Image (cartoon, rainbow over all chains, first blue to last red; front, side, top):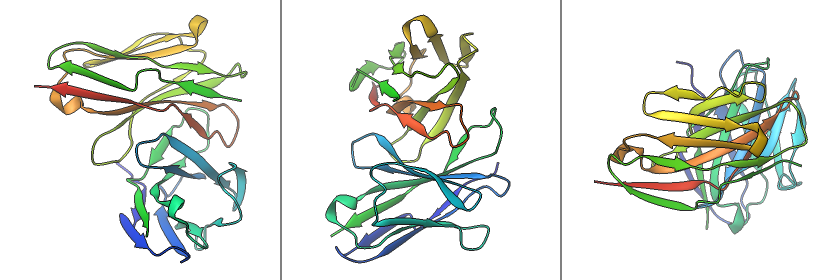
Length: 114
Length: 115
C-alpha cells in the first residue's frame, strides 16, 4: 500500500537554528498538508498546498514557517529560527483529488528544540 | 468555524469490555466528512474510518462500529470486546467538503485496556 514517507523520524536542534522537515507524498496525490501535535495535545492544521502554492494556512503558520515542493516529489516544511515552543510532532499528509478520497498521514517527525 | 469535542479525556476498561468513545462536532456546512484516527504509543496516526454527511448508516468493521447521528451532531465509536492492543489515543476529526479540506481534530481520548 502506498505510503507517505517523512524524514527524519526525530530531529534535535538548537534554538534559533533553521530546520527542514521532509516528506514524500504518495505520487498521484495532489493535495499536501502539514499538521503539528505538541506533546499530549491535539493535532493542529498548519498549512495545505495545492498546484504549487499554499491554499490555506492556520494562525500557527506565521512568517517563521514556509513550505516548498522543490522537485515534484518532496514536500518540505522549513522553520527559519526555531523556538522552544516549536518542539512537537510534525505530520505530513497527502490526498488525491476527488471527494471520496481520504488522507494518508506519514509517521511523523519528532522535533525537539533545545 | 468548525469544532470537534471529545469530552472523555481518558477511559480505562478491562479487556473484553465494550467501550464507546464520544465525538460531537460543530459545523455550518451541509456537506462535510467525519473521521476517526488511532494514535498508538509509537505516535503515528492510523486511519480508521471516513463518513460523509449524507451517509448516516452505521458501520461495523470487525470489533469496531460507528454511530453517526446528524440530529445530535455526534459520531461515536464503539470497540466491542476490547483488547490490550486497542490501548491508544483516539481522535475524531472533521473536514469541509471544499478543495483544501483540512482536518479539524478533537482533543483525543486516551483509551487504556487493562489485561
